[in-house]
Amino acid sequence: MSSGKVLVVDDEPEAAGLYGRMLQTLRIELTAAQTLESAREHLGAEQFDCVILDLGLPDGYGGDLLAAVRSARPDVPVIIVTGTPSPQTQADTSIKGALAYLEKPLDPEHLRRQVSLAIWGPQ
Image (cartoon, rainbow, N blue to C red; front, top):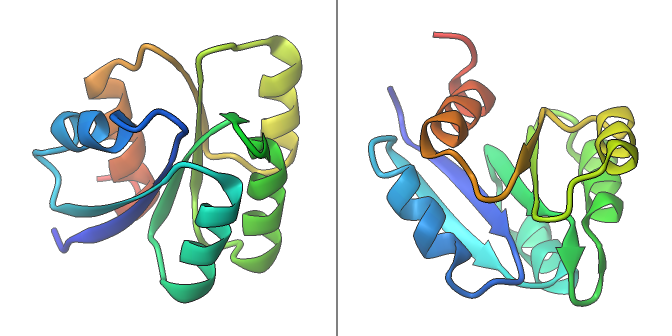
């Protein structure tokens, strides 16, 4: 299994470290962004195999970034994470093309499965 590169977009400073520990058995490189603006900069400068995207960000709604990623890079899977789930946001992100919709607190095994599926497909 080759390594993968994942962008974590979450306003919680410790999120990338937490996801890194949850995903440590996978060979991936994590890059962190805490705002939509920072995420857009990373996406414009680097290639990612997957994006883990929180919906609640300080400078806007993560679903807007999801739509932009799906439009510009339809090959990059996006996994939504949220601490405030609702049927409306789940439907919205599904329509915009999210691979998965995960509720916080995250189950580490479920996150590993979704990231593995996003990067390497069904095993």
